[in-house]
Image (cartoon, rainbow, N blue to C red):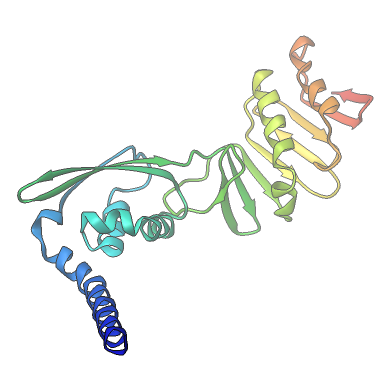
Length: 234
């Protein structure tokens, strides 16, 4: 029994050593096989972010090896987010194997800017879901929201989205919006709309904007929502 215990101990120790060695050397072995090497990248879906952002991320994160492309997927996405400024919403990857290496097709989905937010000298972008990002590859575009307090945008993004959509459905395209603790001011090409602070605006007040297109707005330059029940048209 004693001899059997010693033999079992030796076998188990040897097995652990072999598994550890294989785990340690396996990445180097895989990396040296040309069959797994990424030779070509085909990037699709990009309109704003340059393709070299994806290729650089692949090169730095997965060492141009198709196996690491999947085992290191999280690192790859983190690197893409870092290089693009969180501008890539999603990526889909599909490999095509050949004797001289692998061709990887990557379809990237960029984030679409819903509003541009200017806070003092800092420019941020929000997509329609309310996701905040900052990318050097994007230009400032309308509608532009100016505010001194970013939480007014973050905490009340749903209200901002409703305001923008109701204005557009009424035939007005927003140029900019000013958010302060005292009021909310919306500018279009022909009309200025002044409302209470964003945290006071409710659905009833927003729905009243939708009724503007039913009025004779010829010559009207401003609409002031003094309260939920009082609107001044000038």
